Image (cartoon, rainbow over all chains, first blue to last red; front, top):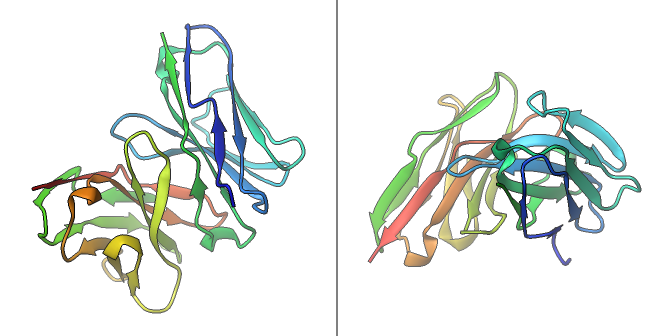
Length: 115
Length: 112
């Protein structure tokens, strides 16, 4: 169990640019979640996958955000035309197939700074 | 709407003193409850969880929490804190579907 891996750890970009983050979950976990965390706040749910299927997406999520998990393993989160308000820590988590009772295992996050 | 409220944004405490971090949730259905800890520039680490059974749950690092259904609370406690417990603590609930809804966090600051 090598844990959930996220890359890059830090990303600085200029407003209007596109960015993509990658998450590698724990290998036997079939659920994968994306959260966003701003300073002084708890993580905010963005979306989650069961295998390759995206089962839920937050209504707060702008159309500029898109996530994929093409083969049910790693996932990418892309933000198009970044805005300063997108600056945050983006957290990925995974869990095993036990459903709602399974704790989420988090990666160390990708910190995005939009200048 | 489903929500989690952590009643204290900051809790300063002296080393070896007891501490309680408060958490209340709203729900009309059964829930699963979790406490996570976050150290600076790191992801979240699970402290403990309540799924069913005994309402007193023990976790890592000497922490425990008590589920109170009538008060919809899940307060976290530790009888004697250490400097190394300084971190951000998040209460979270899981409803159907498995996603977690988090509270806003409580910053625990342990002073010597």
